Image 1 (cartoon, one colour):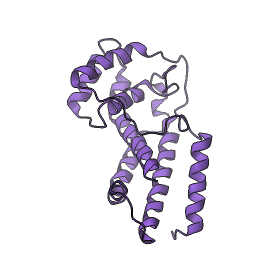
Image 2: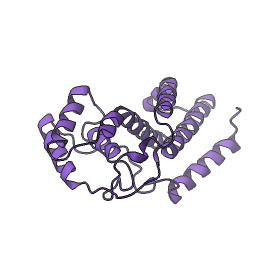
Image 3: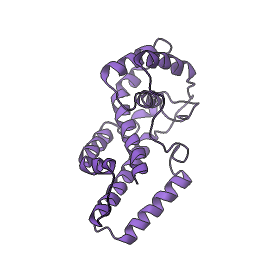
Image 4: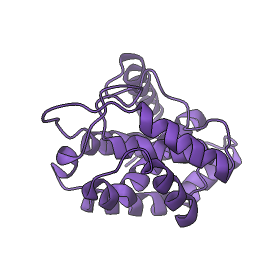
Length: 202
């Protein structure tokens, strides 16, 4: 697709409208990348217990918002990639972070494809959903991975994940469905975070 100046302004206009009107859940209120105070392993386990006690669950059937969210994240990542590529073609300098995004975009696309494959329509509808907090209306397990990512600066390994979940379950047991969903929720959260980082690059 040929990217013209008019196309660039059209994309920017749509992105501006998108973030100002909050076209999908929480976009208007929570645009910064997931980042909070960095915790040691001991602090993470303590935090897991606090988080577990703080959750209140919704009662009744909830529509699955995650596929729509994945689609919105993919759309913006593609638009940012196109704008950055246009910047290079027109001789404008770009940041090292923007270069990384362009060089590794094929990996991001692979993860989006995997996420869509492992998140069939309705997959998360049977998971417990939150009735409180900034993730109200989202699956509890999704917010758990956001907490892990936020307090580890995105550096998640099997040991830190296992320790957090273990500490969480000393207060509240997760369902078998939530435990199975952890890998896909981590992938979705990382894609979401990349979208937020790309917004700052833009």
